[in-house]
Length: 223
Image (cartoon, rainbow, N blue to C red):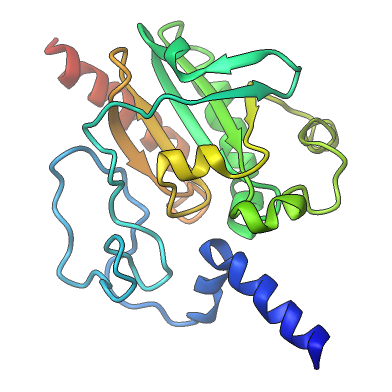
C-alpha cells in the first residue's frame, strides 16, 4: 500500500506533462498556436486550475511573462561553461524549456532539433534550451535513466546549447507551466512570443514557427 501511495505522489509531481493524457477526447480549440503579447483567449479555455487558461489537454493558452523582461537567472551549460540570461541582450533568441522526464518533450525532440537547424541559417537568431526537472522535489528523476543530457544528445545524434536547471529554480523563476515551452526573446530581453510543443501542431509546425518568429522580429523593429 505504501509503495502504491508513493507512486501516486510521484505521478502528481509529473502532472505538468502527464496529467493531460487522461483526456482521450479533447474538445474546443487546442493551445498549439503561437502567442504574442495582447493575444485573445478562446471562450472554451479551462480556468479550473486557477493559474492560466488551458485547453482540454492541459496546455496553456498564454505565458504570464509575455511582453515583460525575461527574469534574470544564471546557470551552467552542458559543456561546463557559465551562463547568464543577461548574455541574451542584443540578439534574438529562441529558448526551449524541456526535460527528458517529460513525454511531451521527448515527442518534441525531433522538432526541436529541426528548429535548431532551421534557425542556424539565420545569423541574427540564436537557439538554446534549458533542461529542467518538473519541480524541486523530483529533481533527481529529471534525466529518466540517462547519466546526463549530453548522453541523451549523443544517442539522438544532435545537440544544441543547453543550460542545466538542476533544482527547478530556473523553471520557477520563469514561471513555466508546461513542458516543453518555447519562448521568443527580443534583443532587449523582453518575451515577445510563446508556444507549447511543436509535435502536436501539424506537419509544418517548424516552418510555421520560423515564419512566426520572422514576423515578430519585423513587427518589433517596425521594418
